[in-house]
Image 1 (cartoon, helix red, strand yellow):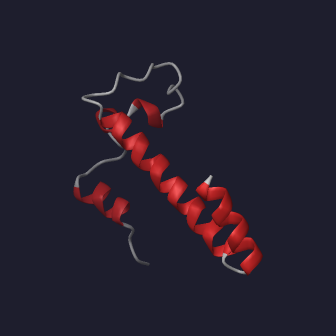
Image 2: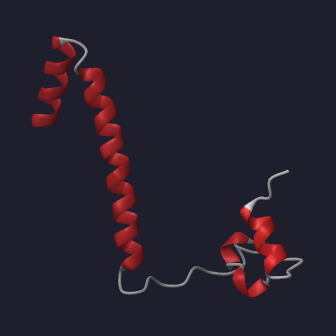
Length: 83
């Protein structure tokens, strides 16, 4: 039977459970009790922008794929984008 990485780590480190200092509050059932900390140096805002950008790119790629299936779909989509 092959051992998983987590099981091996617990054996090597002689751990029976994950230390509470290694568990983020947002991973627990008490996550809603603790307010989110304010963004540090705009990093959280940057990450949100990156995620939103990626999501929009994915949607645009899907739209482009379907719009390219016919000339009429292509022209309609192109005209809507250019507005």
